[in-house]
View 1 (cartoon, one colour):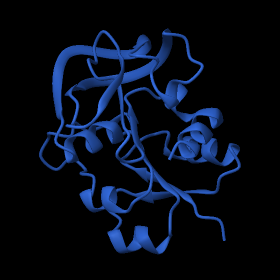
View 2: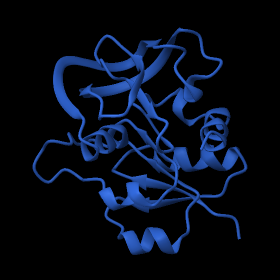
View 3: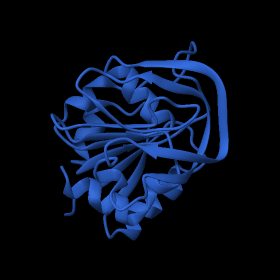
View 4: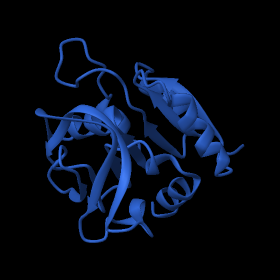
Length: 185
């Protein structure tokens, strides 16, 4: 049986869309809740995890948290929006209310080519953002690959693990990007 890509739902309105986009890349996917146990995740034998967005702020009381054990499974993890922030927080980065909310079209600037997730994208291009919080400091060992006016760390990656993250929703979920990210791991 093909290993699935699990889309972890942190309350995003578009978790099903992410799963569909993964399937459009001819990769089997399933949506799972953010509070699934590590044993439930392991039992599905995933090829990768995609951490969805959500309406919360990671630093609020009662906000959904990323189970840090999932980052130790030895599989690629791709965080989008809230999933990006939850992964950053779990790895020791900093998330803050920047006072500069971004909603809708936003210009993203790539840093040093942007890495595999932004391959073939122009150095400056429009993305879709919906956030009031932003990653202000990347976790140790991560490289910032993109910025926006309101997000000093709009995307990041590390080479020590197959982890990528982006605060955008638009380019992050294209079949081409999904295939490129899993090939790079």
